[in-house]
Image 1 (cartoon, rainbow, N blue to C red):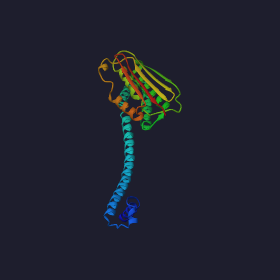
Image 2 (image 1 turned 30 degrees about the horizontal axis):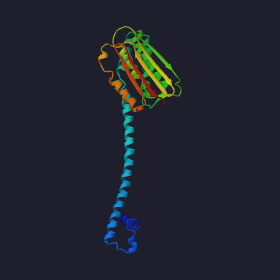
Image 3 (image 1 turned 180 degrees about the vertical axis):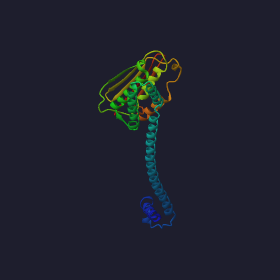
Image 4 (image 1 turned 30 degrees about the vertical axis):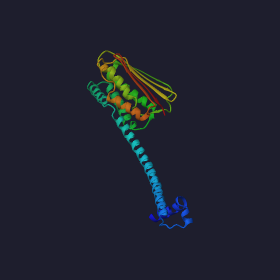
Length: 263
């Protein structure tokens, strides 16, 4: 390798740096030639070093991108896995009560809870699912809450637009719906109406939840609970700056408006 470099340096020097050396018949031990050879050696070292740095940079860039993608994938999986478990516990407690009462609703609750958990386990790890599947999942959740709260909660659910062939990341909207139930049912003040709207327009999904009552205590607390923080972080990872989320509340209502691009 050293011999190759010497030959390359010699050719480089005699043809580029000090071409008159051959015409003048200068010895390779001549001072001017040695100086020219030294400069040529610096050129060669600098050139090869630049190539090495470029190759290393490209390798590190690819490695960094791979790690970032894996990191984002792991974080997204973690955020999805942090679906608040209290819903499952509440449903199981409700199922236990229905069983003790030998209620006719117990078998229906078992079936719906089984379908709900099956969706979380088998569809939750996918990158995206058909919107129709996500809506069925949401409806299943609403039905379970109906079994839990009975006539105390009324849900006005509307869907507009064409959903065939459209997909959405799984479990993305549930946190907002769960939050609407939470704010509307945390206290005993009669019936509560929850509004849930999903509208598909062009390549955008518009999602809205609103409940007509809110616990007076909540107005003094932050709206950014762990569940909402996780959902916001997930939205940021999935859509960067291509989504829009607004949260509004006062002592009478809590409202969420979300706009996300569709596949």
